[in-house]
Amino acid sequence: MSGMFITFEGPEGAGKTTVIRKVYEEMERQGYAVMATREPGGIDIAEQIREVILNEKNTKMDAKTEALLYAAARRQHLAEKVEPALQRGDTVLCDRFVDSSLAYQGYARGLGIEEVKSINDFAINGTMPQMTIYFSITPEEGLKRIDANQGREKNRLDKETLNFHQLVREGYELLIAQSPERFRVVDASQPMQAVYEEVLQLIQDTLKKNQI
Ligand code: TMP
Image 1 (cartoon, rainbow, N blue to C red):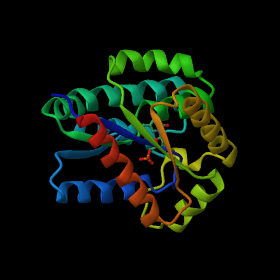
Image 2 (cartoon, rainbow, N blue to C red):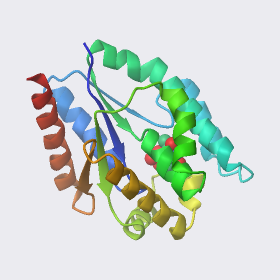
Image 3 (cartoon, rainbow, N blue to C red):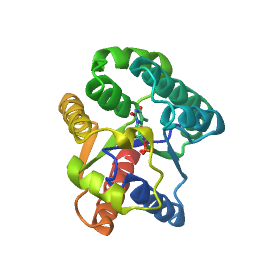
Protein backbone atom coordinates (compact mmCIF):
# COMPACT_ATOMS: atom_id res chain seq x y z
CA MET A 1 0.00 0.00 0.00
CA SER A 2 1.23 3.47 -0.77
CA GLY A 3 0.15 6.58 1.09
CA MET A 4 -0.48 9.95 -0.44
CA PHE A 5 2.41 12.39 -0.78
CA ILE A 6 1.26 16.02 -0.48
CA THR A 7 3.64 18.96 -0.69
CA PHE A 8 3.20 22.63 0.19
CA GLU A 9 4.87 25.41 -1.72
CA GLY A 10 4.95 29.17 -1.79
CA PRO A 11 7.03 32.16 -0.79
CA GLU A 12 8.25 33.05 2.68
CA GLY A 13 5.58 34.44 4.98
CA ALA A 14 2.68 32.67 3.23
CA GLY A 15 1.70 30.83 6.42
CA LYS A 16 2.48 27.30 5.19
CA THR A 17 4.11 26.10 8.38
CA THR A 18 1.25 27.18 10.67
CA VAL A 19 -1.42 25.76 8.37
CA ILE A 20 0.40 22.43 7.97
CA ARG A 21 0.67 22.08 11.74
CA LYS A 22 -3.05 22.71 12.22
CA VAL A 23 -4.04 20.37 9.38
CA TYR A 24 -1.77 17.68 10.80
CA GLU A 25 -3.26 18.03 14.30
CA GLU A 26 -6.82 17.87 13.00
CA MET A 27 -6.18 14.87 10.75
CA GLU A 28 -4.47 13.05 13.57
CA ARG A 29 -7.42 13.84 15.86
CA GLN A 30 -9.75 12.35 13.23
CA GLY A 31 -7.70 9.15 13.15
CA TYR A 32 -5.83 9.50 9.85
CA ALA A 33 -2.36 7.93 9.58
CA VAL A 34 -0.56 11.17 8.82
CA MET A 35 2.94 12.57 9.08
CA ALA A 36 4.11 16.19 8.80
CA THR A 37 7.66 17.08 7.88
CA ARG A 38 9.69 19.80 6.20
CA GLU A 39 12.51 20.54 3.79
CA PRO A 40 15.33 21.18 4.03
CA GLY A 41 15.41 19.12 7.22
CA GLY A 42 12.94 16.77 8.86
CA ILE A 43 15.65 14.36 10.05
CA ASP A 44 19.02 14.87 11.68
CA ILE A 45 21.34 14.68 8.65
CA ALA A 46 19.12 16.95 6.57
CA GLU A 47 18.74 19.43 9.47
CA GLN A 48 22.55 19.61 9.59
CA ILE A 49 22.63 20.36 5.86
CA ARG A 50 19.90 23.00 6.42
CA GLU A 51 22.18 24.65 8.97
CA VAL A 52 24.93 24.99 6.35
CA ILE A 53 22.63 26.24 3.59
CA LEU A 54 20.77 28.83 5.63
CA ASN A 55 23.57 30.05 7.89
CA GLU A 56 23.86 33.80 7.43
CA LYS A 57 27.67 33.50 7.64
CA ASN A 58 27.85 31.54 4.39
CA THR A 59 27.79 34.53 2.09
CA LYS A 60 30.30 32.87 -0.27
CA MET A 61 28.01 29.98 -1.16
CA ASP A 62 27.95 29.34 -4.89
CA ALA A 63 24.48 28.94 -6.43
CA LYS A 64 25.25 25.42 -7.70
CA THR A 65 26.54 24.38 -4.28
CA GLU A 66 23.30 25.64 -2.81
CA ALA A 67 21.23 23.63 -5.33
CA LEU A 68 23.29 20.48 -4.69
CA LEU A 69 22.95 20.81 -0.92
CA TYR A 70 19.17 21.14 -1.18
CA ALA A 71 19.12 18.06 -3.40
CA ALA A 72 21.34 16.15 -0.94
CA ALA A 73 19.10 17.07 2.01
CA ARG A 74 16.09 16.04 -0.08
CA ARG A 75 17.58 12.63 -0.91
CA GLN A 76 18.32 11.80 2.71
CA HIS A 77 14.93 13.01 3.91
CA LEU A 78 13.14 10.95 1.27
CA ALA A 79 15.10 7.78 1.88
CA GLU A 80 15.06 7.95 5.65
CA LYS A 81 11.64 9.38 6.39
CA VAL A 82 9.22 10.06 3.53
CA GLU A 83 9.47 6.82 1.54
CA PRO A 84 9.12 4.53 4.60
CA ALA A 85 6.04 6.51 5.69
CA LEU A 86 4.47 6.25 2.22
CA GLN A 87 5.19 2.53 2.17
CA ARG A 88 3.36 2.18 5.50
CA GLY A 89 0.40 3.89 3.84
CA ASP A 90 0.66 7.18 5.72
CA THR A 91 -0.38 10.50 4.23
CA VAL A 92 2.75 12.65 4.18
CA LEU A 93 2.44 16.45 4.43
CA CYS A 94 5.74 18.01 3.40
CA ASP A 95 6.58 21.70 3.80
CA ARG A 96 8.46 22.32 0.50
CA PHE A 97 9.89 19.82 -1.98
CA VAL A 98 11.50 19.82 -5.43
CA ASP A 99 9.38 22.73 -6.74
CA SER A 100 11.16 25.00 -4.23
CA SER A 101 14.50 24.13 -5.84
CA LEU A 102 13.10 24.71 -9.32
CA ALA A 103 11.59 28.11 -8.38
CA TYR A 104 14.40 29.40 -6.10
CA GLN A 105 17.59 27.91 -7.55
CA GLY A 106 16.40 27.11 -11.08
CA TYR A 107 14.47 30.26 -11.86
CA ALA A 108 15.23 33.01 -9.31
CA ARG A 109 18.97 32.26 -9.04
CA GLY A 110 19.11 31.68 -12.78
CA LEU A 111 20.60 28.16 -12.82
CA GLY A 112 17.83 27.00 -15.16
CA ILE A 113 14.74 24.99 -14.26
CA GLU A 114 15.82 22.05 -16.47
CA GLU A 115 19.36 21.98 -15.03
CA VAL A 116 18.12 21.97 -11.44
CA LYS A 117 15.50 19.39 -12.34
CA SER A 118 18.18 17.05 -13.66
CA ILE A 119 20.20 17.01 -10.41
CA ASN A 120 16.97 16.53 -8.49
CA ASP A 121 15.88 13.64 -10.71
CA PHE A 122 18.94 11.80 -9.41
CA ALA A 123 17.98 12.65 -5.82
CA ILE A 124 14.29 11.81 -5.93
CA ASN A 125 14.43 8.84 -8.27
CA GLY A 126 10.83 9.17 -9.43
CA THR A 127 9.12 9.95 -6.13
CA MET A 128 6.81 12.90 -6.82
CA PRO A 129 3.87 14.29 -4.85
CA GLN A 130 0.36 13.42 -6.01
CA MET A 131 -0.77 16.89 -4.98
CA THR A 132 1.04 20.19 -4.40
CA ILE A 133 -0.77 22.98 -2.59
CA TYR A 134 0.56 26.40 -3.58
CA PHE A 135 0.10 29.26 -1.10
CA SER A 136 -0.37 32.30 -3.28
CA ILE A 137 0.61 35.66 -1.80
CA THR A 138 2.45 38.68 -3.19
CA PRO A 139 6.13 38.95 -2.19
CA GLU A 140 5.38 42.32 -0.56
CA GLU A 141 2.71 40.82 1.70
CA GLY A 142 4.84 37.76 2.49
CA LEU A 143 7.87 39.83 3.48
CA LYS A 144 5.67 42.14 5.57
CA ARG A 145 4.42 39.12 7.52
CA ILE A 146 7.96 37.87 8.12
CA ASP A 147 8.92 41.25 9.57
CA ALA A 148 5.86 41.19 11.83
CA ASN A 149 6.61 37.65 13.07
CA GLN A 150 9.36 38.28 15.61
CA GLY A 151 9.62 34.65 16.72
CA ARG A 152 10.43 33.33 13.25
CA GLU A 153 14.02 32.41 12.38
CA LYS A 154 15.48 34.76 9.76
CA ASN A 155 17.68 32.97 7.27
CA ARG A 156 20.08 33.74 4.43
CA LEU A 157 17.33 33.56 1.81
CA ASP A 158 15.00 35.89 3.71
CA LYS A 159 17.64 38.55 3.19
CA GLU A 160 17.31 38.46 -0.57
CA THR A 161 15.83 41.48 -2.29
CA LEU A 162 12.20 41.98 -3.19
CA ASN A 163 13.25 41.44 -6.80
CA PHE A 164 14.50 37.93 -5.94
CA HIS A 165 11.19 37.10 -4.29
CA GLN A 166 9.32 38.40 -7.33
CA LEU A 167 11.37 36.02 -9.47
CA VAL A 168 10.52 33.16 -7.09
CA ARG A 169 6.84 33.89 -7.67
CA GLU A 170 7.31 33.96 -11.45
CA GLY A 171 9.17 30.65 -11.22
CA TYR A 172 6.30 29.05 -9.33
CA GLU A 173 3.80 30.42 -11.85
CA LEU A 174 5.71 28.70 -14.65
CA LEU A 175 5.75 25.41 -12.72
CA ILE A 176 2.01 25.63 -12.04
CA ALA A 177 1.36 26.23 -15.74
CA GLN A 178 3.48 23.17 -16.59
CA SER A 179 1.67 20.79 -14.18
CA PRO A 180 -1.85 22.14 -13.60
CA GLU A 181 -3.15 18.65 -12.69
CA ARG A 182 -0.81 18.41 -9.70
CA PHE A 183 -1.08 21.94 -8.29
CA ARG A 184 -3.93 23.41 -6.23
CA VAL A 185 -3.65 27.16 -5.70
CA VAL A 186 -4.89 28.61 -2.41
CA ASP A 187 -5.27 32.34 -1.76
CA ALA A 188 -2.94 32.74 1.22
CA SER A 189 -3.79 36.41 1.74
CA GLN A 190 -7.03 35.27 3.45
CA PRO A 191 -7.10 35.01 7.27
CA MET A 192 -5.20 31.94 8.46
CA GLN A 193 -8.36 30.13 9.64
CA ALA A 194 -9.92 30.37 6.17
CA VAL A 195 -6.73 29.09 4.52
CA TYR A 196 -6.58 26.21 7.00
CA GLU A 197 -10.20 25.19 6.35
CA GLU A 198 -9.71 25.30 2.58
CA VAL A 199 -6.54 23.22 2.74
CA LEU A 200 -8.05 20.63 5.08
CA GLN A 201 -11.07 20.27 2.78
CA LEU A 202 -8.87 19.90 -0.30
CA ILE A 203 -6.83 17.14 1.32
CA GLN A 204 -9.79 15.23 2.70
CA ASP A 205 -11.66 15.42 -0.63
CA THR A 206 -8.59 14.13 -2.47
CA LEU A 207 -8.05 11.29 -0.02
CA LYS A 208 -11.71 10.27 -0.35
CA LYS A 209 -11.55 10.35 -4.15
CA ASN A 210 -8.42 8.20 -4.15
CA GLN A 211 -10.04 5.52 -1.99
CA ILE A 212 -12.68 4.74 -4.61
P1 TMP B 1 11.46 27.68 4.99
O1 TMP B 1 11.63 29.11 5.37
O2 TMP B 1 10.18 27.38 4.31
O3 TMP B 1 11.79 26.71 6.09
O4 TMP B 1 12.53 27.36 3.82
C1 TMP B 1 13.83 27.66 3.97
C2 TMP B 1 14.35 28.47 2.81
O5 TMP B 1 14.93 27.61 1.84
C3 TMP B 1 13.33 29.30 2.09
O6 TMP B 1 13.90 30.58 1.88
C4 TMP B 1 13.15 28.60 0.76
C5 TMP B 1 14.48 27.96 0.55
N1 TMP B 1 14.51 26.75 -0.27
C6 TMP B 1 15.16 26.79 -1.50
O7 TMP B 1 15.67 27.82 -1.92
N2 TMP B 1 15.24 25.63 -2.22
C7 TMP B 1 14.71 24.44 -1.79
O8 TMP B 1 14.81 23.43 -2.47
C8 TMP B 1 14.03 24.44 -0.50
C9 TMP B 1 13.43 23.16 0.02
C10 TMP B 1 13.95 25.60 0.22
